Image (tube, rainbow, N blue to C red; front, side, top):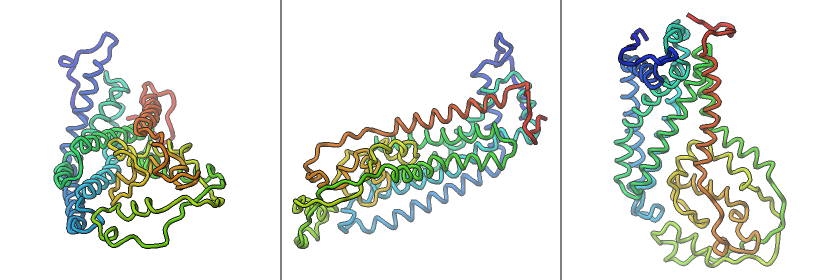
Length: 379
């Protein structure tokens, strides 16, 4: 943080401030150089490479030998790819707060934040420069994981366009999570609180959305009277049981089952009213960005993101597409459900939340400071 500002290369504006882009670039360079000078940075990259490599090896070793069996139908490539990508996203959400949660709080505790605030830099330039540096640092870990993502993609079963969309959404999630870390760091007095606060916000989107959906489901129940599926009392023929098609048994039962004439009372949940809560979940957003056509009869073979996407659209479709024969119609007789991509809603929720938090952070860095919080250090 001792690097001087070059006002000849980065001209001063008419209002006595450093040019907006030049100020962001200056903070970005200082922050990134400070990270690169740290030896722990390279150790973390090495550990990350080993962990993702071990996960990839374990997933391939676990699933590829079973290609000859009907459960995977010789198509374990997609299963391997989505499992590896799931762990990359999981680990990325765990480490991204570490790159951002101490960026401003650390300067405040070291007494260097006041020096930066006393330069031509504005609060927005400080925040955005540090945010950009934290995001680039997190993206470096995504780049390290790319060889394993490409390796799992090479096994087949996934289109290149889907892989590209998955990676782009991963980059967006890293952008949001590091932004949360920088914002929390701006309003925090101590580094410990900044780290814990950032992880709590990451958990809010990753786990809190699931809890919120589950609690809301309890309030969206309704008792209705409807029909039910009357399944055949015989087993499928041998050719169906031994088929390499993972959906063969399910398809046979669908074809040979009928809706009952009798009715029964059952509890349904109007998930179509509360599905939007899940839209901001990072795993749902990554799964939904490259979703496949929805089929209520589809049975996944364990693909994580495909399964998440199917569950999300089942929630959007509502109880009629979750309880077969509820209204006297089999799933195959129902029209296509009115489902829509949820990832734009998730992006909007995350961006609005982050924007509000960034505004609070900007106000916290304004100088002169009228009132200091207890324990806050200025210089």
